[in-house]
Amino acid sequence: MAREFRTVGVVGLGTMGAGIVEVFARGGLQVVAVEVDEEAGQRGRSHLEASTGRAVSRGKMTQEQADELLGRITISTSLSALADAALVVEAIPESLEAKATVFAEVDGIVGEDTILCSNTSSLSVTELAVRTKRPGKVVGMHFFNPAPVQKLVEVVRTVVTEPDVIEDVQRFADSLGKVPVVIGDRAGFIANALLFGYLNHAAKMYAERYATREDIDAGMRYGCGYPMGPLALLDLIGLDTAYEILETMYGESRNLLHAPNPVFKQMITAGLLGRKSGRGFYTYEAPHSSTVV
Ligand code: 3HC
Image 1 (cartoon, rainbow, N blue to C red):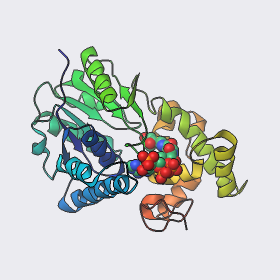
Image 2 (image 1 turned 120 degrees about the vertical axis):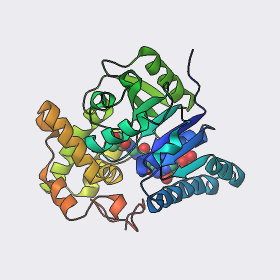
Image 3 (image 1 turned 90 degrees about the vertical axis):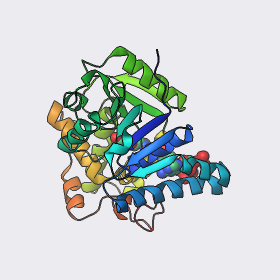
């Protein structure tokens, strides 16, 4: 029988985690979100309040609906709060060791039928699965930034994933208004494997002063109809995250398309991480702002 997902969990309330929590809460689910400490939890809550506040100010949601949505979210600093979750998505930074530790711990807390998902964009889901006692119930559930807006969810199956788990996660994503696609466990899956060669190439053009950042971005926005140019998109994704994704993909395939251009490392070292730090290829009004100054 198909699983029902009424209470779900999210570990990590960064940009992606908070976005995923919002998707789940918009879907009417009870959501338990776990962060490492009170301060990080508060940052996550502020992100959620800002996002729902924007929806209210645009007339997409009433204040009452926003309050109800926020009321369905519990933020905790302990993984034990996930005990009743039927599905848990991990969305912490891209470190295999850190993620594997979370998986092993959550495995000992949740019910035996609970599905454990990773929002990883490039690490091996199989490696995470084998760190638990339920490898057949571990999948990738990869959302795109901003999670409440982008419809795609990549459902990553490993060689040991149980078929009913894939079906249930697909159905679940569908019920949230998302478009699930199923893919095997290879770094980058579908979208990042295609996207990051292009983003890396744009960073190279910029680093070589081939064209200005505005013109590189205008080329793709007005020539190809992309909603954002590649450099603005890298700022949205975060240069540190983009670098890690490129490194992992390059490490796995040795495809030169994915060898990170040196400009990434230089900008990261200088603290230019994109929107999250207030400056990347562009400079923003404040950290996390989308307004370019
Ligand atoms: N959270 C929630 N909602 C948001 C949001 C956010 N961070 N940012 C924008 N939105 C909503 C707005 O509220 C608005 O909603 P409405 O239509 O219901 O009023 C809608 O999105 C459009 O927003 P705006 O009018 O402010 O701005 P744009 O029309 O310029 O859209 C954008 C902004 C959605 C970010 C659009 O430029 C876009 O789709 N860009 C491409 C993003 C992309 O390619 N993402 C994938 C990155 S790769 C990835 O995530 C993989 C990972 O592994 C790295």
